[in-house]
Image 1 (spheres, rainbow, N blue to C red):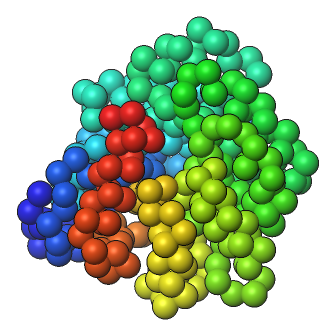
Image 2 (tube, one colour):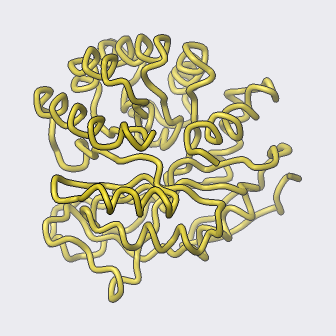
Length: 302
């Protein structure tokens, strides 16, 4: 698709123009939708309350970015009520897939209905929940793989480098794809090395996939040389298992020091810049198309 118009504003953020030809059927592999709260109430035990971010707004952003496919990831404020995510899939008319959140009360019939709707994985969001116990992570990974393996789904995990390193052998032996969110929250500095080494090992073996998403969550900053080198290192380890996503609408920007009922503002992230940054990391056009089109098509069953 052609490069986008000069600028696009959404939620008070201006997104720069995309300055390269986005390949047809490119996929944003990490987004969320929120609200309206009156129709889709948030879980009582949530860690934060987001503002509203609609499917229509997401589609407008994607027209600007040249994205034709999307993966909606169940966000933590909804707990295991996947209604908002599943209803969003219906509005996308086959151009969307989703990653759900389930628990021990989720039945096999419900999983089959989710599959028919377009769900292709489940998420373990340990980082947002503040869980850093490696033993718990290993148990959850094994439980999740047992639930979704028969459906051909994957397990997506959001955790920190220490947990990732401790769970390396478990991930390697699961027998289902494991997708690691947001660079694994790792880095190239000495403190992040154990998690990075584990992630590289899992990538090379084919046990893990990585989302090159939300680099603003990394300490060095998204446009820094260390993050650029980290991205290139991960891609070199297994270009067939790389994915890209915006993380729109970028929840998690508040201090979380007040009431959980207070609406936490989204982070002001320029997603046009995020997509242009990926093209800077990946100057090879065939490889860029692999990351944006072919890898997501395989994993998410488009």
